[in-house]
Picture 1 (cartoon, helix red, strand yellow):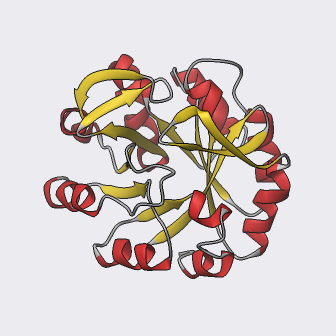
Picture 2 (picture 1 turned 45 degrees about the vertical axis):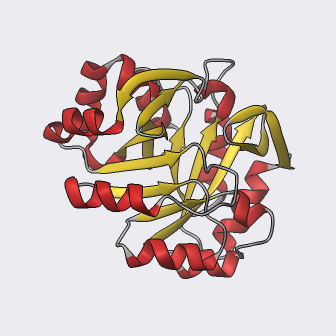
Length: 237
């Protein structure tokens, strides 16, 4: 399993939200490129970058920051936020993203999302943010009225390889990851699963590794000193 630190951006600052609430924001750094360099220097090889304002449809995306991170580090970057068309995804790849995460687009434009999966294969991550089993979109503010199962059933025939699942009720809470959710998906679907939300400490990483997840996104637990760079680097490959 790979541990992937999260770098969530609002207006160029690295932040974390509590349960996706934009009014409950903690700023951790105003220099995301230096923060990314710290991860790279520690031996971490992958980073999850998301522009939170672009995700909910407000403001430009952070492709300039993406490009600077890729140029300044050895990190492979998963990029998310504001990807709503094939051209948006291709611009992110052109600016250095190794992977592009599709969320709202996967609900609102299934045809284009399927084309992206067919073209880019395992470079596309279906990123599903769930409240119970229902997927929320537009920065978690809108109910899609679709289950994560229905979206997986739709996209897997097009060659979907990666799915990231966030339990919104746990995101930013340090209450532990949704192990049962990930087990259900692994048992039912032939996909690689990325865990997101609720990770507290090294023991949670061990528990996720034990169920054979592909990777786990670590956010607040790192920024508040509960998981060290060295502990994340242990899961670098």
